[in-house]
Amino acid sequence: EIACGEVLDDGATASISGVLVNEAGEPYADATVQLCTATQCKPTTSDASGAWSYTDIEGGCYAIDAHHIEDHTVKVLSFVEVGTGESRVLSEDIVLYDYAQEDTVSGEGTVTTGNLQITASEDGYNPPFGHDGGTLVKSIQVDPAAAGLPFDTIEGDVVAMWYLGPWSTELEPGWGITATGIDGISEGDTIQVLSGDYFGMGWDIAGEVTAGADGAVTLTNDDCGGVHFLSTLVLVKK
Image: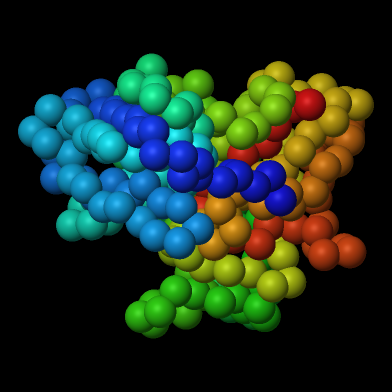
């Protein structure tokens, strides 16, 4: 786990702000944003210009998530660090995407989404409360350079990224993956596979592997490896 760390309760305040947009780059109004610590979340809503902000917060590391409830967009998740006394403005607009596909899994099967193949299984699929759609996987592959997410706590280059859902689904045992044809990955590269862990407040390390022929990245669920959350999934070149 790459933990987000602690919020500094030292009396000094900070602020953070950003903008949400849709896939066309247009402001996304009335979307829900949450800034979370291990003990609480502070919700807010984006305005007509897509802007959102938090003031009078403690310096430290936070989980940030956002989505548009009525439009059923992906729920983005990343982790941000705010220095004590800092007024941080995120340098990139965060994009709220629509899921590109939904796949229903019966027993065990392979879900292919973009350059990613997921070894999915009904066994150990723990969906969020209220989910009644069976073993369902929602997904979209996005360009990490265009998604606008801050990757404060990640060391290395984020070379590939997917949003997976339904949000808050936990997988135990973890699901294996294979990613092929990713620009920037060559045979012999060390690739770390991370998924956002909303409960553990950080990036869950699904595994670290050496890319094979043609840059293929293969991660199994042996020895507790594999992806354990349907959330933001990234490949990091170390």
